[in-house]
Length: 110
Length: 120
Image 1 (tube, each protein chain N blue to C red):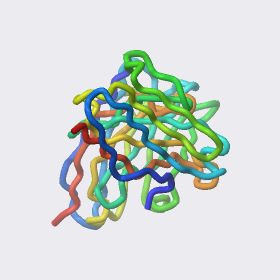
Image 2: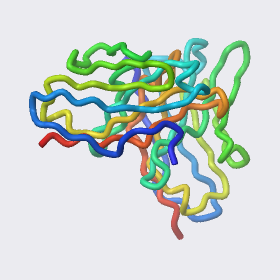
Image 3: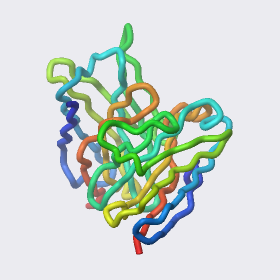
């Protein structure tokens, strides 16, 4: 049972907009920023969004993030076939004194 | 560009010690701006942060409670790397293990991952 809650799956067709939610608590989202990671099969997670809504260099602007209170979301606009991957949210947790992750959302591009 | 290169055995016997190393290039294990983490991933437990080491005016470690009695993360300044030791492993410790750097609130660079299977 992951500390952060994500839907297990999401899907969309090419060109669509898809939003993935992530729910936390005061001990993580209430005090710290949220990061989002993309994991392609057989590879390590790669940071997609950091500090709630910032894109590292090289990440397409189709990816955006937001946070409000103890909830966060990742939005992918103009969905592409190469976006098919697992997506994870993450934050530091004050109570656990460590990083916590969501259970992951498997995105399928139909 | 920071790169993390992991090494270590992929098969460990139950009750023995899992040992992995993460070699750092493009940064220093002694940097006061970052911390060096170990994370594992399995189908049953998902992504699980295990612990970290970092240098400020002295070396510090943080470990997750579930493995705190069995884990050691050590820096090696002479080789610019850090290591993970997990004692008394069981099949439940079977996972892909990753090393990662965090700067501020983000795990921004990850190693390639090492599948470690605990089996006799």
